[in-house]
Image 1 (cartoon, one colour):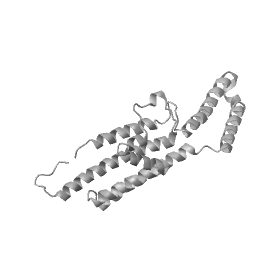
Image 2 (cartoon, helix red, strand yellow):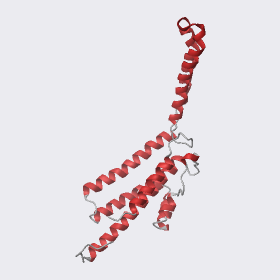
Image 3 (cartoon, helix red, strand yellow):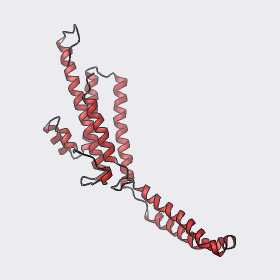
Image 4 (cartoon, helix red, strand yellow):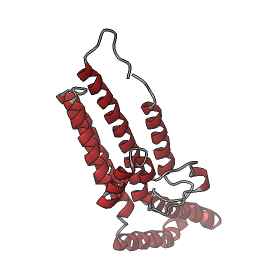
Length: 217
């Protein structure tokens, strides 16, 4: 770190050096956290759609090894990588407060943001693991089938025989198509082209974090 003009206080210089190191650690842990979240949502052996692939994808352990091999081993040994990263980020916030880089209000705000990330992750996992109840699917499809079968008898006196088949086809296609679309939207995390490109989003966020880490304030 560059010493301020006229600043000869060695304790302050050491505090600045320590703050820079804590900042570097904080950013690396955030990057690893996002990667661990993506792996938890998709699974370790996930293969995205070719249009959603990213180049130079790294695991969270590889990112943590840039801090130290010991850090990566401790995280892996915990068995709860996401929880470990959250705790480590909160510890960095406490260290920033000890170094007077952050005051109490800003430290609380950043800590709340970290806990907010945990809440978003939980919501994503609920969408990922919660399936539509089988009775609901059976009931819905039964109602749709009954509607499509009985519709011709309800409109036979209004559209005539010639238009019966086209009208029945269009209406049935609209209702059955909406059922298919709802099933597709019920599972947004996958390896289809239309699935949410979580890996690409995380990769872009990690690139911005690395860019931020290279800035000299």
